[in-house]
Image (tube, rainbow, N blue to C red; front, side, top):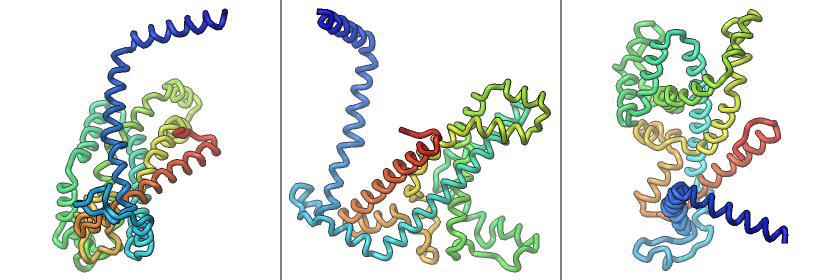
Length: 312
């Protein structure tokens, strides 16, 4: 009898809560439907990776070929080179953008003038809103044989003749990393600045009383205070290592640096669109998604074992 009364009471509470939260439930329903239609339903297209897909026949009538497309991918030396390029540029971008964003946020936090701080912060995140077309155009002009970089190096006597930076593969990855840093550092620093403002000011006051200088405050208060934020963002961004980019590599790349400039996305474009092999392009996309998920799971477990912040 007591259990029945408890069940009836819980049921009344549940329906009362549903009525009270009905607006949020309606919004959640539409968000769920939106996510299913635009995020999960398109995954049915992955079936193409296991078919000799022909647009005229469609998914249901194209010939099933199993793992043949995957065997072709991993047997293609060009695809293995593309994986190397994508992974190396992704890691380089991750490290440089993360370090620069943290460094910029910490240094910006040390500016005492609120007007100067807001001005610098506003200027710093404006490049985030620029198209990669504009960014790569600026890089081309700055790094050209008659650009400002070569002009400065010649005037300082560092080099004897102009360097064609886009003709030497060894310069390509640093250029891509610099472009990402310049474009995204200010924007990425916003969340670190928010984390810094959440640190208890009394910690800095106590450190001042103990005679700590500004560098010691950064080392022992600021950086430990934003460590959870750094770990969470790092884990989230690790999944994007193979999303090293498409626009910047496609726009800056040329035949002379093709061996280091091609990424998985460019490979998919060349095979999936240019040569109409949609199955091969889909297989490459599945590989990239699988590796990204694996990286997140592995790094999350490593963070868990180390006692650090984790995603799940």
